[in-house]
Length: 518
Figure 1 (cartoon, rainbow, N blue to C red):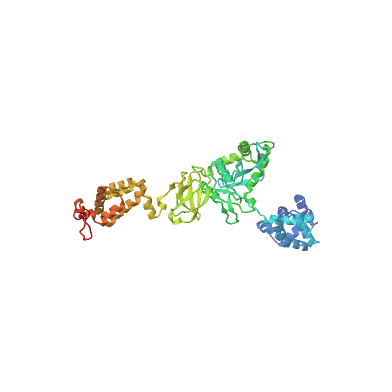
Figure 2 (cartoon, one colour):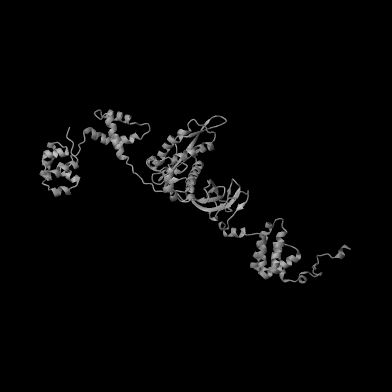
């Protein structure tokens, strides 16, 4: 076997001793290098014709190439060239379900009988895979990210009636900087349970990081993508409420949330182990048992460092954003069509909420919780109301109505009396009496509106006289006011209006008199 080349430190030590006038025998004793090897290196150095000063200025790499010459290029054997060309395809095949390196080698050796044996084949394949899967170490900033995931192994509660073991999901969250961990058991990974777990996690931390990093579960991500994932609307609303961002990992990239993946393994070792052979009859009881174990886990000292709790208190607590004044409430989602009266119906309460009139006939998305109702059209919020559970009632914003609707919506008893009084007290009193004669005041609204309209056509002075004359008749309707104005009766005095006795029966030869019947 060829001799190993000397390190650059040994070579410089030999050259330094040579410049000081030491012989090869003495240099061999000082450096522990064979005398013939010393002679060989000195001979190569003399061939370069370098001076002592030039040697000191050369880097180790330059000095190595000057004395030893450039490294000889490695020559690949024929079978190594064949395997190198196959490695991209082989590594791709390895990602297939149930595929193993042994099966790949068997396929390789069947096609190339003179190829490598299994151990060498797997060594070259592992080297290729390691070159491709380069990783990067990230320095996590305080308060920047929290990584969340569900543990693969569930915990169990026991049904007290049937004795059945019911699996419960385990939600895990880890802050990037301090690795301060949150843990709880939930009924499922559904949207409602997942969102509530995230809310309780932020309350446990007492603040909000700038980003939450989930994987691509459906409760968080509607459609995964390497470049532009589409978030679930409910979870997006949750993030907006807390002023944080959602940064889903790329599909099939567990290293992007390696912190929480590692935390899950530690949870198995340091928390699950203490729950063995223990029976829990409710989810609440299971979570109560988890609390002291989680506290002990966070208090446990890391390798040569403070505990997760100490690091959280020192580094991360003050860096978190403040929690909002009110906790997030999960929004229910319904699709509704805007009716012609510019309202949508929330069927759960049988209550109606207004929408801007431009959206009549459009399908809108209704998000609601115990406190409020929000209405969206194409991802833009177009209305928001306080939730009202009164059945068959309307919650209306005047800004949502068209001009004609806004005018009609303002109709009421006080409105018409006030508008009539603006013309004259006689008109106001007449319209008040008109509405009072109706079984329901709303039945007189259109008549009052018509009377106000007559003021524009006939003038206010004539309308005042007409209302005075109709009040004298004791008749409170719109048609009587219209008739008085059309026949100009408002201009006549009561005496002028009464017909003469002889004018009651006109003279005509075809009309029989009273004498005919005597």
